[in-house]
Image 1 (cartoon, protein in one colour):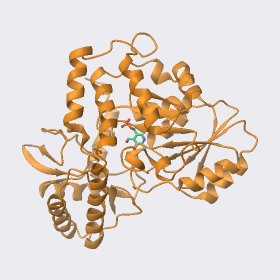
Image 2 (tube, helix red, strand yellow):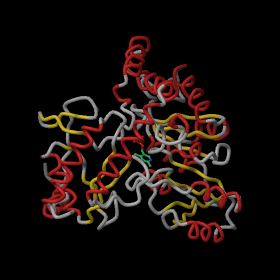
Image 3 (cartoon, protein in one colour):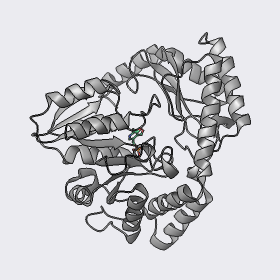
Image 4 (cartoon, protein in one colour):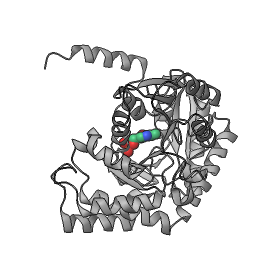
Length: 391
Ligand SMILES: Cc1ncc(COP(=O)(O)O)c(C=O)c1O
Protein backbone atom coordinates (compact mmCIF):
# COMPACT_ATOMS: atom_id res chain seq x y z
CA UNK A 1 0.00 0.00 0.00
CA UNK A 2 1.32 3.46 -0.92
CA UNK A 3 1.66 6.31 1.57
CA UNK A 4 4.15 5.13 4.18
CA UNK A 5 7.38 5.46 2.16
CA UNK A 6 8.56 8.15 4.63
CA UNK A 7 8.32 5.66 7.48
CA UNK A 8 10.11 2.98 5.50
CA UNK A 9 12.96 5.42 4.76
CA UNK A 10 13.47 6.00 8.47
CA UNK A 11 13.31 2.26 9.18
CA UNK A 12 15.87 1.62 6.44
CA UNK A 13 18.24 4.15 7.94
CA UNK A 14 17.79 2.47 11.36
CA UNK A 15 18.75 -0.82 9.69
CA UNK A 16 21.83 0.90 8.23
CA UNK A 17 22.85 2.07 11.71
CA UNK A 18 22.35 -1.42 13.16
CA UNK A 19 19.64 -0.29 15.60
CA UNK A 20 16.55 -1.84 13.97
CA UNK A 21 15.14 -4.57 16.20
CA UNK A 22 12.61 -7.31 15.56
CA UNK A 23 10.30 -8.60 18.25
CA UNK A 24 11.42 -11.87 19.82
CA UNK A 25 8.49 -14.25 20.33
CA UNK A 26 8.74 -16.72 23.21
CA UNK A 27 7.54 -20.25 22.51
CA UNK A 28 7.33 -21.21 26.18
CA UNK A 29 6.07 -19.73 29.43
CA UNK A 30 8.02 -16.90 31.04
CA UNK A 31 10.48 -18.87 33.15
CA UNK A 32 14.15 -18.75 34.13
CA UNK A 33 14.70 -20.44 30.78
CA UNK A 34 12.56 -19.74 27.73
CA UNK A 35 12.30 -21.18 24.24
CA UNK A 36 13.20 -18.88 21.33
CA UNK A 37 13.38 -20.19 17.76
CA UNK A 38 13.08 -23.73 19.07
CA UNK A 39 16.11 -23.31 21.38
CA UNK A 40 16.04 -23.15 25.18
CA UNK A 41 17.92 -20.10 26.47
CA UNK A 42 18.47 -18.43 29.85
CA UNK A 43 16.02 -15.55 30.31
CA UNK A 44 17.66 -12.39 31.65
CA UNK A 45 15.33 -9.85 30.08
CA UNK A 46 12.00 -10.26 31.83
CA UNK A 47 10.64 -8.29 34.78
CA UNK A 48 9.36 -11.53 36.28
CA UNK A 49 11.48 -10.90 39.39
CA UNK A 50 9.85 -13.49 41.62
CA UNK A 51 8.79 -16.00 38.99
CA UNK A 52 5.12 -15.25 39.71
CA UNK A 53 3.96 -15.37 36.06
CA UNK A 54 3.67 -19.14 36.48
CA UNK A 55 2.97 -19.44 40.21
CA UNK A 56 0.47 -22.33 40.72
CA UNK A 57 -1.71 -20.36 43.19
CA UNK A 58 -2.06 -17.50 40.75
CA UNK A 59 -2.79 -19.75 37.79
CA UNK A 60 -5.43 -21.53 39.86
CA UNK A 61 -6.99 -18.21 40.95
CA UNK A 62 -7.15 -17.09 37.31
CA UNK A 63 -8.76 -20.34 36.16
CA UNK A 64 -11.39 -20.17 38.91
CA UNK A 65 -12.17 -16.54 38.08
CA UNK A 66 -12.67 -17.34 34.41
CA UNK A 67 -15.00 -20.19 35.32
CA UNK A 68 -17.03 -18.05 37.74
CA UNK A 69 -17.02 -14.65 35.99
CA UNK A 70 -16.02 -15.28 32.36
CA UNK A 71 -13.21 -14.06 30.15
CA UNK A 72 -13.90 -10.32 30.12
CA UNK A 73 -15.86 -7.57 31.87
CA UNK A 74 -17.62 -5.90 28.96
CA UNK A 75 -17.41 -2.33 30.23
CA UNK A 76 -15.31 0.44 31.67
CA UNK A 77 -15.24 0.56 35.47
CA UNK A 78 -17.48 3.64 35.71
CA UNK A 79 -20.35 2.17 33.69
CA UNK A 80 -20.83 -1.56 34.25
CA UNK A 81 -17.30 -2.95 34.50
CA UNK A 82 -16.67 -2.86 38.25
CA UNK A 83 -16.97 -6.32 39.78
CA UNK A 84 -16.79 -7.06 43.51
CA UNK A 85 -13.51 -8.77 42.60
CA UNK A 86 -12.00 -5.39 41.56
CA UNK A 87 -13.05 -3.58 44.71
CA UNK A 88 -12.03 -6.39 47.05
CA UNK A 89 -8.62 -6.44 45.45
CA UNK A 90 -8.21 -2.66 45.77
CA UNK A 91 -9.00 -2.86 49.49
CA UNK A 92 -6.52 -5.69 49.96
CA UNK A 93 -3.86 -3.74 48.06
CA UNK A 94 -4.44 -0.62 50.16
CA UNK A 95 -4.01 -2.66 53.33
CA UNK A 96 -0.84 -4.20 51.91
CA UNK A 97 0.56 -0.78 50.96
CA UNK A 98 -0.46 0.85 54.27
CA UNK A 99 -2.41 3.54 52.42
CA UNK A 100 -5.99 4.73 52.80
CA UNK A 101 -7.05 3.58 49.33
CA UNK A 102 -5.86 2.30 45.96
CA UNK A 103 -7.23 2.45 42.45
CA UNK A 104 -6.18 -0.14 39.87
CA UNK A 105 -5.72 0.83 36.23
CA UNK A 106 -5.00 -1.14 33.09
CA UNK A 107 -1.22 -0.75 33.42
CA UNK A 108 1.52 1.12 35.23
CA UNK A 109 1.78 3.29 32.14
CA UNK A 110 -1.87 4.34 32.31
CA UNK A 111 -1.67 4.81 36.10
CA UNK A 112 1.00 7.46 35.54
CA UNK A 113 -1.01 9.03 32.74
CA UNK A 114 -4.15 9.14 34.85
CA UNK A 115 -2.65 10.72 37.93
CA UNK A 116 -0.30 13.18 36.23
CA UNK A 117 -2.83 14.38 33.68
CA UNK A 118 -5.61 14.91 36.18
CA UNK A 119 -4.57 16.28 39.57
CA UNK A 120 -2.69 19.43 38.51
CA UNK A 121 -3.84 22.66 36.84
CA UNK A 122 -2.09 25.57 35.15
CA UNK A 123 -1.56 27.08 38.61
CA UNK A 124 0.64 24.14 39.62
CA UNK A 125 4.08 22.80 38.75
CA UNK A 126 5.42 19.29 38.41
CA UNK A 127 9.11 18.74 39.21
CA UNK A 128 10.51 15.56 37.68
CA UNK A 129 13.81 13.64 37.81
CA UNK A 130 15.63 13.79 34.46
CA UNK A 131 15.68 9.98 34.12
CA UNK A 132 12.08 9.25 35.04
CA UNK A 133 10.25 6.60 33.03
CA UNK A 134 8.61 7.40 29.69
CA UNK A 135 5.14 6.95 31.19
CA UNK A 136 5.88 9.76 33.67
CA UNK A 137 7.22 11.95 30.87
CA UNK A 138 4.13 11.29 28.77
CA UNK A 139 1.85 11.87 31.77
CA UNK A 140 3.54 15.22 32.32
CA UNK A 141 3.01 16.08 28.64
CA UNK A 142 -0.71 15.78 29.29
CA UNK A 143 -0.91 18.15 32.26
CA UNK A 144 -1.51 21.89 32.00
CA UNK A 145 0.85 22.43 34.93
CA UNK A 146 4.28 24.01 34.45
CA UNK A 147 7.21 21.58 34.32
CA UNK A 148 10.67 21.55 35.78
CA UNK A 149 13.28 18.85 35.39
CA UNK A 150 15.93 18.33 38.07
CA UNK A 151 19.25 16.60 37.45
CA UNK A 152 19.10 12.86 38.03
CA UNK A 153 18.98 12.11 41.81
CA UNK A 154 20.68 15.49 42.42
CA UNK A 155 19.24 16.99 45.60
CA UNK A 156 20.81 20.41 45.05
CA UNK A 157 19.13 20.59 41.67
CA UNK A 158 15.81 19.49 43.21
CA UNK A 159 16.08 22.10 45.96
CA UNK A 160 16.82 24.78 43.38
CA UNK A 161 13.69 23.78 41.44
CA UNK A 162 11.64 23.88 44.65
CA UNK A 163 12.99 27.32 45.57
CA UNK A 164 12.25 28.69 42.11
CA UNK A 165 8.66 27.48 42.16
CA UNK A 166 7.33 29.04 45.35
CA UNK A 167 4.62 31.00 43.54
CA UNK A 168 2.72 27.97 42.28
CA UNK A 169 -0.38 26.71 44.11
CA UNK A 170 0.91 23.13 44.31
CA UNK A 171 4.30 21.60 43.63
CA UNK A 172 4.43 17.89 42.81
CA UNK A 173 7.81 16.18 42.88
CA UNK A 174 7.90 12.94 40.87
CA UNK A 175 10.53 10.23 40.91
CA UNK A 176 10.95 6.62 39.94
CA UNK A 177 11.55 4.56 43.10
CA UNK A 178 13.99 2.34 41.20
CA UNK A 179 15.21 3.71 37.88
CA UNK A 180 14.22 1.22 35.25
CA UNK A 181 17.29 1.30 33.00
CA UNK A 182 20.02 1.86 35.60
CA UNK A 183 18.64 -0.03 38.60
CA UNK A 184 19.59 2.66 41.12
CA UNK A 185 17.27 3.54 44.00
CA UNK A 186 15.99 7.13 44.35
CA UNK A 187 17.25 8.94 47.47
CA UNK A 188 13.73 9.01 48.86
CA UNK A 189 14.52 10.08 52.46
CA UNK A 190 16.25 13.22 51.13
CA UNK A 191 13.46 13.88 48.63
CA UNK A 192 10.87 13.56 51.40
CA UNK A 193 12.79 15.96 53.64
CA UNK A 194 13.04 18.55 50.88
CA UNK A 195 9.37 18.19 50.00
CA UNK A 196 8.38 18.60 53.64
CA UNK A 197 10.60 21.67 53.93
CA UNK A 198 9.00 23.28 50.85
CA UNK A 199 5.50 21.89 51.41
CA UNK A 200 5.48 19.96 48.12
CA UNK A 201 3.59 16.80 47.22
CA UNK A 202 5.63 13.67 46.44
CA UNK A 203 4.86 10.92 43.96
CA UNK A 204 6.95 7.77 43.63
CA UNK A 205 6.66 5.35 40.73
CA UNK A 206 7.57 2.00 42.24
CA UNK A 207 7.21 -0.12 39.12
CA UNK A 208 10.59 -1.81 39.68
CA UNK A 209 10.35 -1.76 43.48
CA UNK A 210 6.92 -3.41 43.80
CA UNK A 211 7.57 -6.97 44.95
CA UNK A 212 11.30 -6.24 45.16
CA UNK A 213 12.02 -3.70 47.91
CA UNK A 214 10.43 -3.11 51.32
CA UNK A 215 8.83 -5.62 53.66
CA UNK A 216 7.20 -8.37 51.55
CA UNK A 217 7.86 -6.21 48.48
CA UNK A 218 5.85 -3.19 49.57
CA UNK A 219 8.18 -0.84 47.69
CA UNK A 220 10.64 1.97 48.32
CA UNK A 221 8.42 3.90 50.74
CA UNK A 222 8.34 0.92 53.09
CA UNK A 223 12.02 0.14 52.36
CA UNK A 224 12.98 3.58 53.71
CA UNK A 225 10.37 3.52 56.50
CA UNK A 226 8.55 6.48 55.00
CA UNK A 227 5.00 5.17 55.29
CA UNK A 228 2.58 8.10 55.62
CA UNK A 229 5.06 10.66 54.27
CA UNK A 230 4.72 10.06 50.51
CA UNK A 231 1.48 11.36 49.00
CA UNK A 232 1.19 9.13 45.94
CA UNK A 233 2.66 5.71 45.21
CA UNK A 234 2.24 4.29 41.74
CA UNK A 235 2.89 0.59 41.43
CA UNK A 236 2.72 -1.97 38.70
CA UNK A 237 1.14 -5.41 38.73
CA UNK A 238 2.91 -6.28 35.48
CA UNK A 239 6.44 -6.92 36.69
CA UNK A 240 7.26 -8.72 39.98
CA UNK A 241 3.54 -9.27 40.61
CA UNK A 242 3.60 -11.26 37.38
CA UNK A 243 0.27 -10.32 35.81
CA UNK A 244 -0.85 -6.96 34.36
CA UNK A 245 -1.94 -3.61 35.67
CA UNK A 246 -0.95 -0.52 37.56
CA UNK A 247 -2.28 1.22 40.62
CA UNK A 248 -2.29 4.47 42.49
CA UNK A 249 -2.01 4.06 46.26
CA UNK A 250 -2.90 7.23 48.12
CA UNK A 251 -5.81 8.79 49.98
CA UNK A 252 -9.54 8.13 49.53
CA UNK A 253 -9.90 11.59 48.00
CA UNK A 254 -7.24 10.85 45.36
CA UNK A 255 -9.02 7.58 44.54
CA UNK A 256 -12.41 9.30 44.26
CA UNK A 257 -10.90 12.08 42.15
CA UNK A 258 -9.30 9.63 39.71
CA UNK A 259 -12.58 7.77 39.33
CA UNK A 260 -14.06 11.04 38.05
CA UNK A 261 -11.10 12.58 36.21
CA UNK A 262 -8.52 9.89 35.40
CA UNK A 263 -9.07 9.48 31.68
CA UNK A 264 -7.51 6.03 31.20
CA UNK A 265 -9.71 4.82 34.07
CA UNK A 266 -12.82 6.45 32.64
CA UNK A 267 -12.41 5.52 29.01
CA UNK A 268 -10.86 2.06 28.88
CA UNK A 269 -12.36 -1.29 29.84
CA UNK A 270 -11.57 -2.86 33.22
CA UNK A 271 -9.29 -5.81 33.84
CA UNK A 272 -10.65 -9.27 33.03
CA UNK A 273 -11.56 -11.28 36.14
CA UNK A 274 -8.59 -13.63 35.67
CA UNK A 275 -6.17 -10.69 35.85
CA UNK A 276 -7.63 -9.32 39.07
CA UNK A 277 -7.90 -12.74 40.73
CA UNK A 278 -4.29 -13.58 39.85
CA UNK A 279 -3.09 -10.19 41.17
CA UNK A 280 -4.99 -10.78 44.38
CA UNK A 281 -3.40 -14.22 44.78
CA UNK A 282 0.00 -12.59 44.18
CA UNK A 283 -0.42 -10.43 47.29
CA UNK A 284 -1.03 -13.63 49.29
CA UNK A 285 2.13 -15.11 47.79
CA UNK A 286 4.15 -12.00 48.77
CA UNK A 287 2.88 -12.35 52.33
CA UNK A 288 3.26 -16.12 52.56
CA UNK A 289 6.51 -16.71 50.66
CA UNK A 290 9.03 -14.02 51.64
CA UNK A 291 11.80 -16.46 50.72
CA UNK A 292 11.15 -15.59 47.05
CA UNK A 293 12.38 -12.04 47.66
CA UNK A 294 15.36 -13.33 49.65
CA UNK A 295 16.30 -15.61 46.74
CA UNK A 296 15.92 -12.74 44.27
CA UNK A 297 18.40 -10.62 46.23
CA UNK A 298 20.80 -13.50 46.76
CA UNK A 299 20.84 -14.13 42.99
CA UNK A 300 21.19 -10.41 42.32
CA UNK A 301 24.32 -10.13 44.46
CA UNK A 302 25.85 -13.25 42.90
CA UNK A 303 25.20 -12.17 39.32
CA UNK A 304 26.15 -8.51 39.74
CA UNK A 305 29.45 -9.43 41.39
CA UNK A 306 30.10 -11.99 38.66
CA UNK A 307 29.66 -9.35 35.94
CA UNK A 308 31.82 -6.85 37.82
CA UNK A 309 34.57 -9.43 38.42
CA UNK A 310 34.63 -10.08 34.67
CA UNK A 311 35.27 -6.37 34.12
CA UNK A 312 31.86 -5.26 32.83
CA UNK A 313 30.57 -1.78 33.63
CA UNK A 314 27.34 -2.28 35.60
CA UNK A 315 26.75 1.44 36.13
CA UNK A 316 25.17 2.56 39.37
CA UNK A 317 22.76 -0.31 39.90
CA UNK A 318 21.87 -1.41 43.41
CA UNK A 319 18.88 -3.60 42.57
CA UNK A 320 18.18 -6.68 40.38
CA UNK A 321 18.10 -4.40 37.30
CA UNK A 322 21.75 -4.68 36.26
CA UNK A 323 22.82 -2.94 33.07
CA UNK A 324 25.95 -3.95 31.20
CA UNK A 325 26.85 -0.57 29.78
CA UNK A 326 28.53 -0.77 26.39
CA UNK A 327 28.07 2.79 25.05
CA UNK A 328 27.90 2.21 21.30
CA UNK A 329 24.40 1.26 20.14
CA UNK A 330 25.37 -1.23 17.45
CA UNK A 331 27.84 -2.90 19.80
CA UNK A 332 25.23 -3.31 22.52
CA UNK A 333 22.98 -5.07 20.02
CA UNK A 334 25.91 -7.20 18.83
CA UNK A 335 26.55 -8.26 22.42
CA UNK A 336 22.89 -9.16 22.81
CA UNK A 337 22.95 -11.18 19.56
CA UNK A 338 26.10 -13.05 20.57
CA UNK A 339 24.66 -13.83 23.98
CA UNK A 340 21.62 -15.34 22.33
CA UNK A 341 23.90 -17.46 20.18
CA UNK A 342 25.53 -18.67 23.41
CA UNK A 343 22.21 -19.44 25.07
CA UNK A 344 21.35 -16.22 26.95
CA UNK A 345 18.49 -13.86 26.17
CA UNK A 346 19.52 -10.37 27.33
CA UNK A 347 18.15 -7.52 25.23
CA UNK A 348 20.17 -4.59 23.98
CA UNK A 349 18.71 -1.21 24.98
CA UNK A 350 19.52 1.92 23.01
CA UNK A 351 18.25 5.44 22.32
CA UNK A 352 15.52 6.63 22.91
CA UNK A 353 15.08 4.27 25.90
CA UNK A 354 18.48 5.42 27.22
CA UNK A 355 20.60 8.45 26.25
CA UNK A 356 22.78 8.30 23.12
CA UNK A 357 26.18 6.80 23.93
CA UNK A 358 24.71 4.92 26.91
CA UNK A 359 23.55 1.79 25.07
CA UNK A 360 23.60 -1.34 27.13
CA UNK A 361 22.49 -4.89 27.57
CA UNK A 362 20.06 -4.88 30.46
CA UNK A 363 19.80 -7.90 32.71
CA UNK A 364 17.36 -8.87 35.42
CA UNK A 365 17.83 -12.07 37.37
CA UNK A 366 14.85 -13.67 39.05
CA UNK A 367 14.21 -15.75 42.16
CA UNK A 368 13.77 -18.71 39.84
CA UNK A 369 17.31 -18.80 38.44
CA UNK A 370 19.62 -21.35 40.05
CA UNK A 371 23.25 -20.43 40.74
CA UNK A 372 24.32 -22.99 38.11
CA UNK A 373 22.19 -21.30 35.48
CA UNK A 374 23.51 -17.86 36.46
CA UNK A 375 27.09 -19.15 36.23
CA UNK A 376 26.29 -20.47 32.73
CA UNK A 377 25.04 -16.98 31.85
CA UNK A 378 28.22 -15.38 33.25
CA UNK A 379 30.32 -17.76 31.14
CA UNK A 380 28.40 -16.66 28.06
CA UNK A 381 28.93 -13.00 28.98
CA UNK A 382 32.66 -13.64 29.35
CA UNK A 383 32.94 -15.33 25.96
CA UNK A 384 30.84 -12.72 24.10
CA UNK A 385 32.42 -9.77 25.94
CA UNK A 386 35.95 -10.90 25.04
CA UNK A 387 35.05 -11.56 21.41
CA UNK A 388 33.67 -8.04 21.09
CA UNK A 389 36.57 -6.45 23.01
CA UNK A 390 34.23 -5.12 25.69
CA UNK A 391 36.23 -6.77 28.47
C1 LIG B 1 9.26 3.09 36.12
C2 LIG B 1 8.16 2.48 35.31
N1 LIG B 1 6.91 2.98 35.42
C3 LIG B 1 5.88 2.46 34.74
C4 LIG B 1 6.06 1.39 33.90
C5 LIG B 1 4.90 0.85 33.15
O1 LIG B 1 4.36 -0.25 33.80
P1 LIG B 1 3.42 -1.25 33.02
O2 LIG B 1 4.31 -2.20 32.29
O3 LIG B 1 2.60 -1.89 34.08
O4 LIG B 1 2.62 -0.42 32.08
C6 LIG B 1 7.32 0.83 33.74
C7 LIG B 1 7.51 -0.32 32.81
O5 LIG B 1 8.43 -0.40 32.07
C8 LIG B 1 8.40 1.39 34.46
O6 LIG B 1 9.63 0.87 34.35
